[in-house]
Image 1 (cartoon, rainbow, N blue to C red):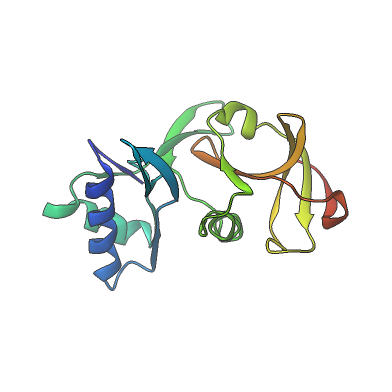
Image 2 (cartoon, rainbow, N blue to C red):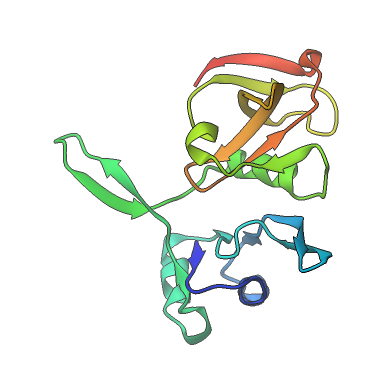
Length: 176
């Protein structure tokens, strides 16, 4: 979900409020160290993006209450069989979200966030990491600054790349 007119403190406050609710299963905000002024601070990667795991009905009820009015669904186009396009709320499959959380939940110098989402979300060779700290994570092979990386993209929203993985740690799954 997006948080309208958000700043990092507002986003984190909404996350705390959502975490206190019994009808929300889980929330997640991707964080990283960034230079703020002349200090390094642990801040959200995108200051208006929060992942919320709950039913659509519960989220609709939640976002219509006072303190949660800034919450907005991220909408994406969906093609119907008759050729018409409509927009619906984006959802992320559990397996992809779990991989993304595993990759981004710890401050790790081998993980970078990508600005170029068009590049990150392009189809490519699908792989699964078989060894190391990220064993079991599935992603797409991309070459970034001459290095082979495994990218875990969330559809046109955010993408994280794992750098410095030996090729022997990768099991090829096919094209995406």
